[in-house]
Image (tube, rainbow, N blue to C red; front, side):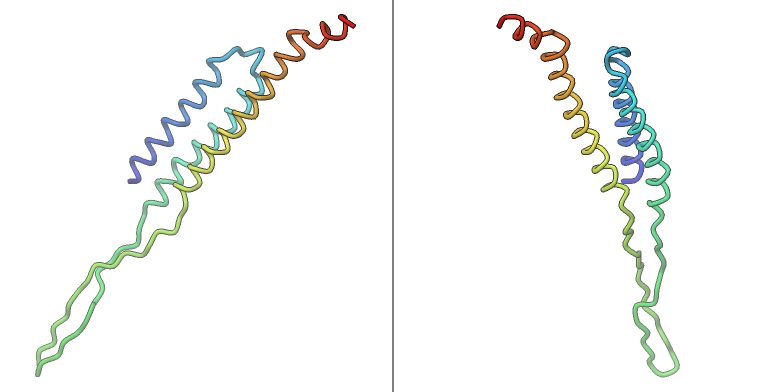
Length: 127
């Protein structure tokens, strides 16, 4: 699962930075700044995912049986549950980027529709 998570984070980071800089650089500099911050944060998650994959597993004695002078042991393989949250952090990061991206698009389209196309000026000149 760890290698899949690392590859997934890497692909998402690449797509975020690629699509942000594929748009017009003069018009969408705020989007590029936002995407750059998310790209850096996603890059930080890659080594975190590698560190979080280290589970503590060991062979422990499950029970001890003594019959006469002979003692036998039953062993079991025990792993502690990994409580680190790289997958949750990755999901929340992508969701926050999507929310901010949709908000950016909403603001940008309103800017283009109302300010840039001068619809507001036309409306007031008509009166």
